[in-house]
Image (tube, rainbow, N blue to C red; front, side, top):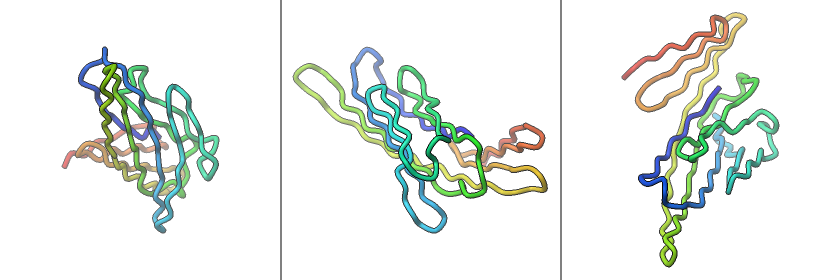
Length: 138
């Protein structure tokens, strides 16, 4: 299941140090730091997602997404992508930060799992049994 986090930079030729932290907020309210990407170094943080997260972002670091492997019912909850950029203009280094929230509900349906995620004003549904996406706009 891909958790999409997009943070566009206006000018690609400007050098920037990018730090991305992913957090998981369980339905019970627990917060867990699950993934870190800094200066081309990926860190799969210890915890319930260890070994199940894969970086799926772009080389230009405008797409900062991750993928959850072997999704289970316990993966339902709120995911948060925190992006921090420090730009390098030689004598001036402004910073930019943004936080994106993604809600994921995993429901069992017979022998298959159906994934629901809210992204960009749409509900994306993936039905593992039929390997098909459905999109609901709202």
